[in-house]
Length: 85
Image (cartoon, rainbow, N blue to C red; front, top):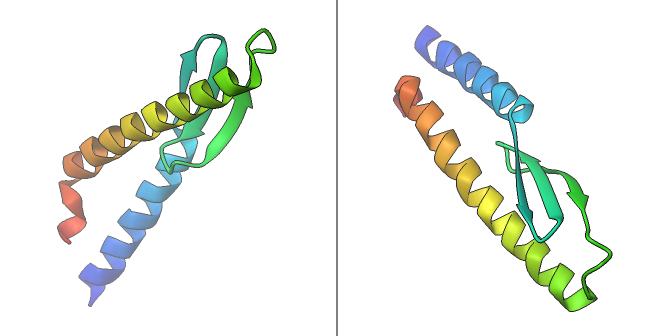
């Protein structure tokens, strides 16, 4: 039973550490920043681009950043032993 409490505490600590770690992706002057919990923290647009191009680059930045966040989160979880789940 105490093992489950320990695992829950580790999971909560892991989740808190993911919130603190950020990464940014930039394409054509558009930047998206998110944390490893995959919460978008900031988006900076490039007013020199047309709306359609901005939308495309924002989408690409978000997808790239989320993929990188997933990989980093998996590496960190694995290095912690996967929490025994």
